[in-house]
Every structure is written in C-alpha cells, then in structure tokens.
Amino acid sequence: MSIDNSQAALLQPLTLGDLELANRVVMAPMTRNRADNDGVPTQVMTDYYADRAEAGLIIAEGTWPSVTGQAYCRQPGIETEAQITAWRKITDAVHDRGGKIVLQIMHAGRIGSSKIKPEGVESVAPSALQAQGEVYTDAAGMQPFDMPRALSTEEVQAVVEEHRQAAKNAQQAGFDGVELHCTSGYLPMQFLCSNTNQRTDQYGGDAAGRARFAFECLQAMAEEIGAGRVGLRINPGNRFNDTKDEDPAASHIELLRQAASLELAFLHVMRAPTRKIDAFAMAREHFKGSLILNDNFEPDTAGDAVEAGQGEAVSFARHFIGNPDLVRRIRQGIALSGFDRDTLYTAGAAGYSDYSQG
Image 1 (cartoon, rainbow, N blue to C red):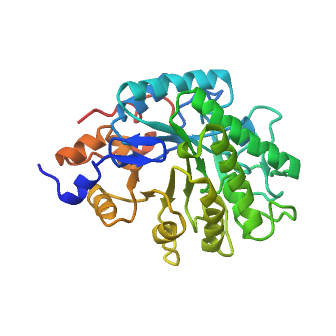
Image 2 (cartoon, rainbow, N blue to C red):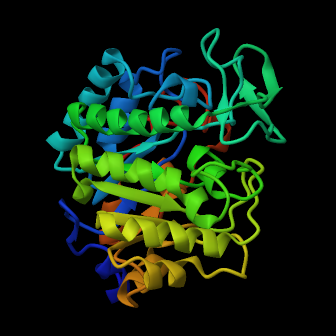
C-alpha cells in the first residue's frame, strides 16, 4: 500500500540542534511504571525502547532528577549509579539499532505520596498548597497527594542544580540529550501557574518571576551538556494535577521569551485543551527553533501538519505502544494496531515489551 505525500514528509531527515534524526516520527514520553522499586530501569525497558529505535527520536519517560521529585511507583530515576548504569544499557540498545534517544527530566514537586517515596523523603513545592486528587501506591492503593513543604529560595536554587546534575547523569548514561517536563502539573508548571505559586521572592509574583525556575533549569542543563541537546515540553492551558493559571498563554509566552536566549534544540508543544489557545500557532510565533507537535495525531494528520509548516516533527504516544514498528507501518502504509489499556501501568513485559513487530 502506498502512502500520500503528506505522510512521506514524516519520513524525511531532520536536524534538531545537535541531533540528526533519520525521520520526523518522534516517540513521545510515556509513564509506564516498569522500573524496579529503587527507580532502576529493568530489562523489559531495554527491550521496549530498543524495539522502537526506528523512531527519528525517542523521548524517554519522565524520570526524576532526585528522589524528592518521584511521583509514581516504579518510576525511573537518573540520580544513582545503578540507575545511570541501567539506563546505559537502554541507550546502547537504541544506538545499536541506529536510533536517537533523549531523557525527559521530570520533578513532580507536590504530586506524589509518602507511600511511594523512601521513608523520610518529603514532597516539596513552590508553596505549601496540597493538590486535589489521588495517586496509586503499591503499598496502600489510592492515596491523596502529600501536603508539600514550600521550598526556600536557597532550596529552589538547589533543585535547579539537581537538574544540572540530571543532565550530566543523562549524558553519562548515553542519552543524546534531555527534555524538561514543564506541563502536567509537575514542579516547573507548579512554579509557572498562578494558583500553585504564591511566592514573594524572585521565583514568584508576575509571569516573569513564575517562569524563572523553568528557565534556570533549562539554562543549567544547557550549560552542562549544550543547548543543542536540550528541549522543553509545554502544554498551555493544561489543568492536570490541579494546576490553573489566570492567563496561561501569557505565562507560557513569557517562558518562551526567557528561553529564547538559550537556542534550545526543540520545543515539544502539546495541543491546548482549551479552544481559547492555539498552542501550535503561539509556539511558532514565540519560539524561533524547531517544533515537535503532539496530541491525537494520526499519520495522515501528522504529515499534513509537517507539510503545512506547523511543526518540524510530530510525536506519537499511544500508537507507539502497540506498534513498535510504527515508522515501518507509516512507510509501507500498513494499518496500525491497538493496545491493551489494562496493562499500561502494570509491572512486567505483558502489554509493554511483548507487542510484535508487524
């Protein structure tokens, strides 16, 4: 079966900063909870990522820079030597198959539970405001999010340094770069949003102050491994995990204004959940580098978006779950398979690394 010209656009090579991609089909980061209880990546994770190495770029799942930032059971970290060594097996496997892979750095802030983190590790946030909602724990089932402790100014700066170290560790683990997770109600977005940030120091107040934390994290990571290997993910208007902002478009525009000086490798932008914001158009206007578009694309609509110049690449999440050979299927015009929702977050290979290659 042949493909149309728009889908063919997805198969063209692309340069993102210092990253040379074989095609424009990006694997989006997806939390899948397959690490061990110490946040160490497992063999099934190596199999999972290696099977999807034909993607132009894999953005590996949200990974904590320090255990304080852990959100979920069986979520990987990039803090310890054991974690770095295990991630190295994954990056080597992807590179052996000709792929590129970057790591999404995700500090969860107030999203988490003491039933997940090691004893004595507390949850922290810009302000001492508890998020409404619950999180699953292996130890006690569903639990409310922790009441976080507000970070002092000096502690905020220490968390910025944790991001610098995470980028260094990711490079040691063989990753081609990193992406800062600045959406879904995690720490950078907690700083950015007006309802979760009630600070009066330089990291609070107006949009410029609230954007400072994310900018300084990006700056630190860029200083450590080069801006051409650093990306940023945003989703203006996202209210996941109880984040709300009085003017999300203005806040994100301010963040992009600050980030402009860094010349990042890419901006990974998700379609806004509200029609009041055209996130793709906003990103194109205020970010002068390459865009990776995300959210509910099919191969044909993704190709149309690239061909129309909305973005340089498109990331897929759910289609990469049941289709490890997604790029081949696009190239050959093969119908896509579905996936088992019941095994999205369970431990082991079932519904994770056991999907067949066409």
